[in-house]
Amino acid sequence: MRVAGRVGLDPMDRGRGSAHDTCTAAAPKPLLNPDPTTLMKRTALILIALTSLAVIGCNKQKAAIDAKTDATKDAINGRKDSVEAAAEDALKQTDANAKVNKANIEAANARVQADLDAEKQKADATAAAEKAKVDAANK
Image (cartoon, rainbow, N blue to C red; front, side, top):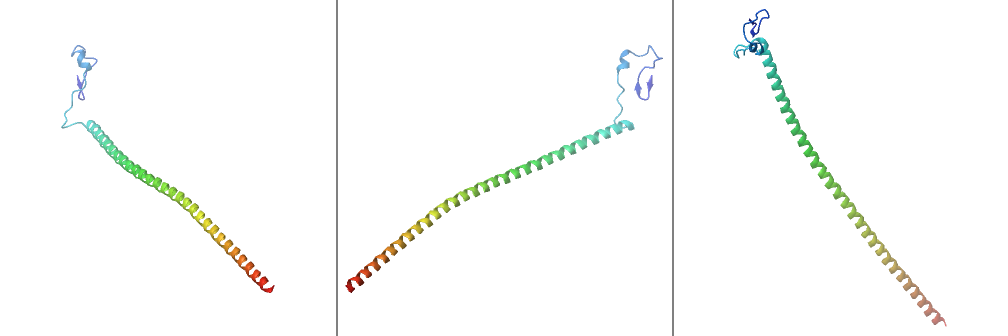
């Protein structure tokens, strides 16, 4: 017995058909003129497939953007590290230069002090010699 497009056996109709007929699926429906249910199922599947493709495409674009952002951040971090290393080197060099400058200043100070001490001793010697002349002239 055929009911609404399906092949099956009427429980009252025994003896017609074989056991194989009860296990078979419905006959394929024509593609050109499908019923509304099949059309909606196909439309829903097509929409799901297109949505999936769009989401996958968006995810690939987002992944590419993330990769570009990560590469940019890595490059910036590399530059920051090199700037920091250069600053540390400059500080070390400045400290070394400061020590050299301090040593030069201390050496110059010691030299000037020695010159002043020598001038003081010379002045004392000159004064002593003049006093000796005066004492010798007065005697």
